[in-house]
Image (cartoon, rainbow, N blue to C red; front, top):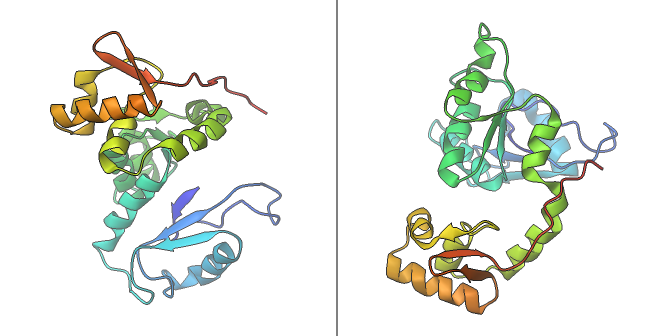
Length: 225
């Protein structure tokens, strides 16, 4: 779970809760600062067991412009974003808006339309967020069974920004060359050369004359165990 500590309740992970999991708390201030002050013990607990992350100097105090920047980093670190409950001015809604810009899915848990704390969860549904009624709705999308394969493929992705930016849009389903150009934002000539290099490295293969797919067949069956 990637969360914003200034609003987050204690994380149900670790031996104390009897559950396995990790919490990465992204701060909108320095690691030596506690905000709000009453969350100092929570910050210490997370730091001892999991991870606190900050993009700011050690003693930096929270500022208004730091919070949307922090929310952008949260959406960038996350595989997907699940918005549970918060008011319309909450940073959770900002994170939800930023997530599609990074080609990730927003999930939301619906609640009463009369509750102010549900505005940030109900509103994204109108913009295409996936409705979550049970945990399987999220797990089926993330597909934990594919984690080893994703890690292996990530190791193969070259360091070059141009190759990585285009490779992320290639899937097991054929992707038209023009679509890969559009999604990656690369010039047609550059993207064409990148696709050739990815094919030579065995990462993608050409389908017909105009489409590419991932070169490896991956297991996509979802397992509940």
